Length: 78
Image (cartoon, rainbow, N blue to C red; front, side):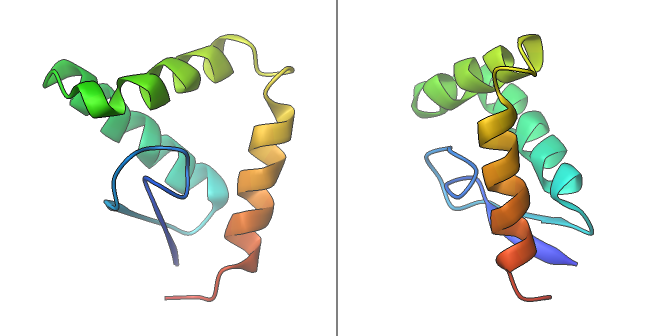
């Protein structure tokens, strides 16, 4: 298991997301951003908008996805 923060994934805070794969932490970030949007947290809105765009246009977002995959791979195990 590894940990990436909201900030490492492009968000504004240091909430940790834990997962066995890069997809686990990306999905945790997506859930976090959705909740922050629902709660009216304006600081997370730009990151939420970017995440929405990535889900809508996955081919255009491959660069970000590959960056996060590599960043996850480079992390030590928890």
